[in-house]
Amino acid sequence: MKEKTRITLEIVQKVLSLPQASYKYNIPSSTLSKWKNLHKTVGLQGLRFYFETQMKKQKQVDCPAPPKVYDEAYVKKLENELLKARAEVAFLKKLRALIQAEKGK
Image 1 (cartoon, rainbow, N blue to C red):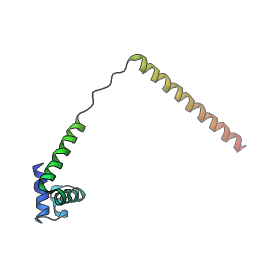
Image 2: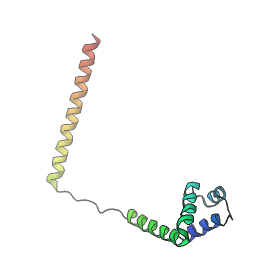
Image 3: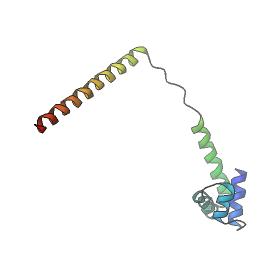
Image 4: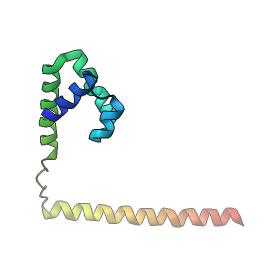
């Protein structure tokens, strides 16, 4: 967060241009432009708050969800549905081939 704030200040204070900062820090210029505009509208404290909330969101997203456990009956039901769907697809493919063969005669 401190580095993002420092980079934004470098851009705002015109130490670096957007393209220069983008190249130097390997951050897309669109992101840097967003940070610059945020600084302009909400100030330094608002920008820091934005970075903090973004980091909290990332931490929530990065945590993997616990694996779901399904009972055996449910798994069997899904397997049967899958088999029926595959059989239906195979049947429809053969039906389409027969119809096209009839049209070709």
